[in-house]
Image (tube, rainbow, N blue to C red; front, side, top):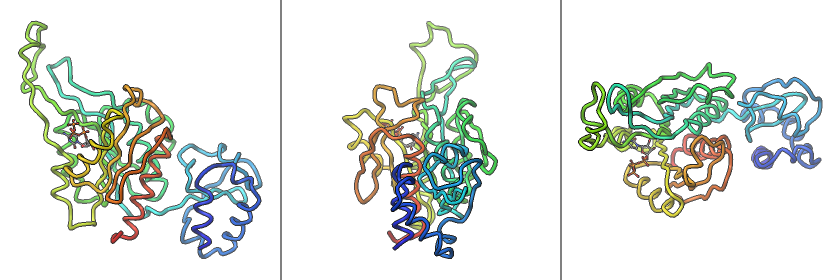
Length: 304
Ligand code: CTP
């Protein structure tokens, strides 16, 4: 199948645009214009360049630097395979107040969830992003956040109530947020240091496991979880959480002694019911597209 052939050849690296067999394949595919229209539904103009060449990629805004693209006569075409699907994505990390001054939090930067939101939007999805304590500078590379419905939350209870409100409307939930597992039982005033040893904590509810029980009939809502684990526990913990939370996919991040947090790169294991795929040091944007490729297959052929 020609369109499949062109698509898979374009996926890997920009240098392929410079190879004549690839440009010939693109020309051939473009000439079958009806077929291409069905596959790539939107075009973007680029400012410079006249021929098919990998270099031109860098002349366009970052949100459309994806594997799903073809350059032809000054235009980039982005695959719109998620058109009409509603994505609910959570990102960042929740914080639980110890008192009016301090909180229990985590080091999640929100980068991975933002990358997924950005890629899903570019591929045609309707995106709602629930964002917990993400630093504004994390949004600097997204030139069009317009189109993404953004909801800001602070703690797990707020994340939970917004999830409840939004969940029924989504086709895909991607739970990239790091939810604080522990919460002080009471939290007013200012705790004195002598009182710290008496601080009482309780567990927060498992939001993902809870919402998974509410999903519409099988296969009509896709659930994706994340986990941050030490290298030696990736597969075991990834599989355990995949089963326990009733998910379709889970990405177990290698925390790599904490260097994952705030990094643009990621390594880990992507697990679904077909098995586990090892991911070694790729950008969070690339992981986003890999994950969306798998989700897209499910959405577009629900019996897979
Ligand atoms: N999660 C959630 N609610 C929680 C904790 C986690 O919805 N209270 C979700 C996260 O958003 C993530 C997945 O569950 O998608 C796994 O998160 P993780 O913190 O690794 O799971 P826990 O079950 O809390 O595992 P652990 O015992 O290792 O802390």
